[in-house]
Image (tube, rainbow, N blue to C red):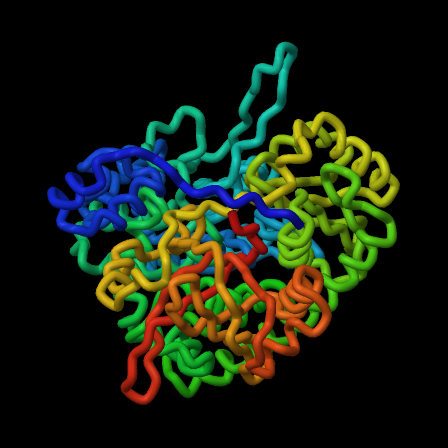
Length: 592
């Protein structure tokens, strides 16, 4: 898949701003590349505090929701928390459950069965809550697209409060005017409401729950310091749900990482122990790629009750076996995902599905893995991808998109073919009858607005930095960009011409390529490549001839001359610290 490399070239007084803010000109450039334009915005980006977070009272219905919850607690009513089965749903529910218990209330968490019921609040949960004498039904990370269950809960005499962050469903009238539809709850807290003036729309479900609990504690007179536990949970969900790490989300994660590392939750401690995560070095990477997937595995391949059992465990003896089970589930998920991706690639190539703007592929994988597999296939082909599987009562699917295409909006146009759907511009889920599959494929590929250019990923390079200019001090300064993740990526630098002096494949799973590279100035440095080694090898052989890669592995002279997009790091081994680069993209670049 051809990439388009773009060197960011925004203009500014880098040196002048650097003197005012107290960082290097390069760091000023990085901040400006990430959307900080003014001196004030740059200071906020690097040095923003918790005081920069917005007042939760600005969120429509948040104060009303907190008041209803508190009133229910004070009169001895029981709260039913209707959650979801992913990390965001799990930690949203945990925030609400812990806070209600702290205030002396009684609460029970309900979750849908992913396979039998699918996403979100449903009639079975409402009926079960009614049987349990629930007087207030509170949703988290769902509910915005569940008008019928919400209405039925009200008919049963329950107070209903929806907290969610997903897109509000709408219908298009003549002329393209949109009519948005909120569920008939007593309070609907969702920053994506068109009538909500909350400045930051990008919160995850746990972020919305945290805002409600801020008001709940404020009203109840609970010290603000006690919110640290919930900020940690919101940080966990923000990263694991792949939300943009900009604006208020970045503050949540930045200031939630420390209380997460120092958590008193024995379940999280146990999971860190079994996965080898050192709390002292906890970062957004560990949440996104180590801890978060273990919770998602519980929701995908087994009951989510295991995740709640872990998080509500009272002792390490109780928590450790559950943590080990979640880790093993995640390992199983990884293997099943790999198989699903390979099957998907085979079918896409055989049927030439990549010729359509939106790829829709039917797989025999476990339906709960469809979203992960769709994401991997999108990375391979650069197209929006839906993976459709056989459910118990029809077809189910998950999609992952590209920047130029809003899945949620285009699903709206196919709503008459679907049993249910929901999601975001970049990700969506759906159910549909078997007989509607062919019509769905046809309709979803009509009027996409996509052009060939949209299918070529853009690689945005922050600066052209020869490796000879790297220093340990400069690399240390890059930590001011943390936490990095979606929409606040690690800094990417580039240099055009590298010779490969030697190379070897390392790691328990032989998935790390370590190269010794030399630039045109003669500077030599180690370089690591963690992506698809086989594809890298094939590219080198294709561009520089058969045997070129073998010569690299033997440490022999070879014709390889590659440009790299990289980020720098410091390797520490047995007390020695050396500079190295991590290769993210590569390409042969003609010499002028």
